[in-house]
Length: 114
Image 1 (cartoon, rainbow, N blue to C red):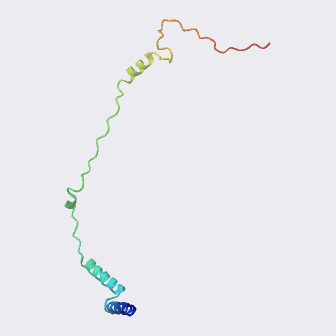
Image 2 (cartoon, one colour):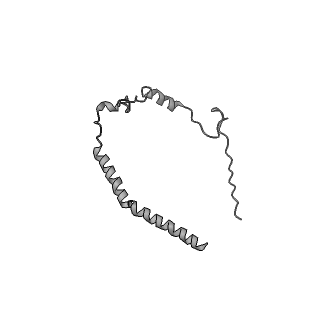
């Protein structure tokens, strides 16, 4: 049992050793890939770029129109309207202009010293 297991393992290791002996090393494969890449890079010829290539891919620029100025023609009339507006005071919503002002009670009561 044990001898067969040892023999099987030793056969696998010798078989793997023979394969790696024949196979190229990792550095040689990297050199091959690098050489192939450089060869293709040198053989590449880019196409010339023309102005007509951009048509359909780029929007044409157009200058936006100038913004309209705000309306200031009726400035004097709006100022006069503002000056004649009634002043709204908080708390006087229900009081008319003709009614006398309500009497304000003094809520602070001071204690007299004896």
